[in-house]
Structures are given as structure tokens and as C-alpha cells.
Length: 250
Image (cartoon, rainbow, N blue to C red; front, side):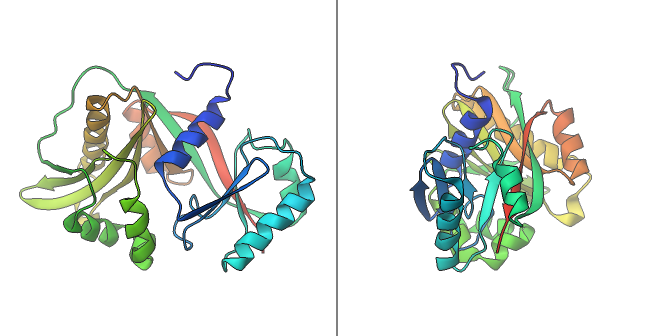
């Protein structure tokens, strides 16, 4: 559990910021503006996680100028704890559209080990892993240069796994350990190999790799419409911690 007076949402947002990098970061009076060539919403949006002092409309305008200079629409990653309070309503009134609502799910990592057989584990994204990841993730496939760059910037000790069955690579995923938390990312299974329990197996193996590296809590992020994934993770013991969503302007 996360102690102290710090908001649990804010703490998990900080951990996710550290776990998934951006190519460039700008700080704006309590807000964190991230840019990574348009690859992933998380790396190309405003994180309004701290209180500030400047007028709100002025800050929104400055953030919009930043993203316009990068050739991107302005995007805010919002939670129930975004600063200042009421930011979501202000952005809505300004015409920022809501999109891509998602859940952050967490679970405690127990002491019971999980089997790591059938998994190739590496400490960096090797070429075979990248080729499999790109084949299963269309957004990464369309922006391979930035995807490769961000994956190479992950915290040291981040494990990448390929799950093999009958000698065939059927799926992959990776984990990032930060402050006794392990984040699970990029879990995907070949379409022809789905509904065989491989998604769960990859998840459990990543949990084991986190446990071996001292993690006590696991978290992951899943799109709210993805009911099958939410059901899978719930069966493994994950529970919804909070939701986040994006508001996108011009």
C-alpha cells in the first residue's frame, strides 16, 4: 500500500510517468507536458497532477501552443484528482472532447511463485521481441522509430518476455519496476492463438518477474470498452483503482 498523505491516484500517476518515458518533457506550473512524436497518448499529453498558481486559461493556452508547435492536437490525461479541481469541466466547456477512457487496475503480489517455463526473458527489447510486438500492435507498427526509442529508454531491469508454445512465439509483454511497483505493458497474443489462456499466462509470468525483483504491487492499464481483458485481469486478482480519460482540443 502507498502510505503518507499523498493521493494514491497521484502517486500511481507519478509511477506511470517514470515507467513509460517521453522523448521530451516540459513542466508548466504544476503540469507535466510530454511529447514523443505522437506515439501513445500517455507520452503526448498533459498530466495536470500538481497544484499551480498561474491563471488556468493562460496555462491551457500555453499548453496548446506547445502541442501546436509539435504538430499535435492538445491532449490532457485526466483523473478524478487532476489539478485544479474542475479542470475537466473547464476543458469540456472549451470544446475539448473526451476520448479513450481507461481503467488502472492493481493487485498485491503474493509470495507464491509462478512458473516461468515456456518464456524467453530478456532485459532489453531484442529484435525478435520487437518484430513480434510490432506484428501485434498496429500503433507501434505505424510509428516504429518512436516505439523503439521509448522502449530503449525504459528503467533498467525491465523484463521483456516472449511466450512460446510448441516452439512457436505466441505472445509477448514487458514489465517496468518502479518504487516497489511493477507495471505490466504490451501484453498481446497472436490472433490464431487466442482463447487458450496465453494472455493470463503472460500476465502471471510478468507478475513473477516483478516479484523476483522486489515488487509488492502490480498495476496495469486497460481500455474501458475492452470487457474481455477487464474480465481476465479481474480473475487474476486485479481490481479497479481509478479511471483516467483524455480530453482533446484543436
